Length: 329
Ligand SMILES: C[S@@+](CC[C@H](N)C(=O)[O-])C[C@H]1O[C@@H](n2cnc3c(N)ncnc32)[C@H](O)[C@@H]1O
Image (tube, rainbow, N blue to C red; front, top):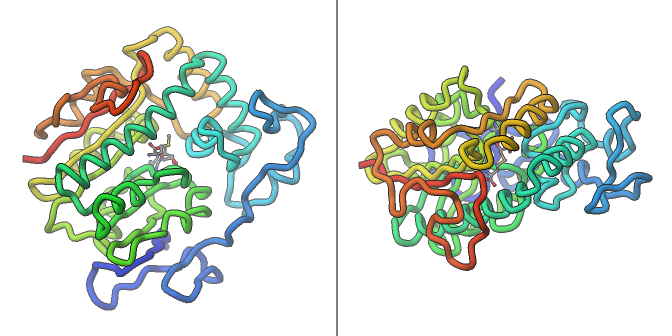
């Protein structure tokens, strides 16, 4: 069965091609389909709390009421990147296993708080640049994460109201909250595809219902390839995506590196991987990141420590993250 695609705003694709519903019983009038809203949010009082006041218990405890609320397809026993990231950003769409993993990361690398905030700030600057100076009106945002402030379509459509944005993620919790990503301007369009980035054919096929691949597209892959193991050939994934978009398209990427703060990054990655189940976290070297941009022209200032990419205000200190934006010649 194809993965669900949810669409808001006019679809671009061939006449008669319709988005499928997230679930047979979840279709809503108006062309938008989604899981029930509000059935996965946590936030009740709990006996043991972390430094942010959220519940923190051990994995051997039975799941709390808040943990068993979501549909059974949610794996709450292992940490998931989207939910760990949500926790680090101060969100509530996470479970005990995610919070334990996040607290371990914080213990090993307290700088992670700066990293996640710097990454969202980079997203804003990169999309602002792409929609503005670069003149891009189409965005393929792979590894979207849970909706938060200043999502890609909000930044892009503020600059260019007709922007068309397709979000892609493979985590069921992101799908459950995808409606919050479908608040397009009337002139533009937003769609959400529940798919794995490794299946580039499916991603591109379904994205073509909303994006015109005859015109430039900004492919955004922020803090996501770090969750694709070397065995799954992450460089080939990016190469296939960039091969599908025309000249004048862009690639925006950010990820964690083990070049900076190497000892704690390697130790932190090992601890995190022990919590992640089948997903693996791979912080890469600068040389490994440079290969993602092979054949593309890096936009100034090039591949740099993330805070140095076109900073707009006081940037944080050194953090173990790289970022870059590049144009397909
Ligand atoms: C750290 S979050 C980044 C969210 C957002 N891009 C940002 O930078 O703020 C990583 C996201 O990538 C998603 N992800 C990881 N591996 C993926 C894959 N193979 N296919 C699709 N999404 C994936 C996770 O579910 C998670 O939502």
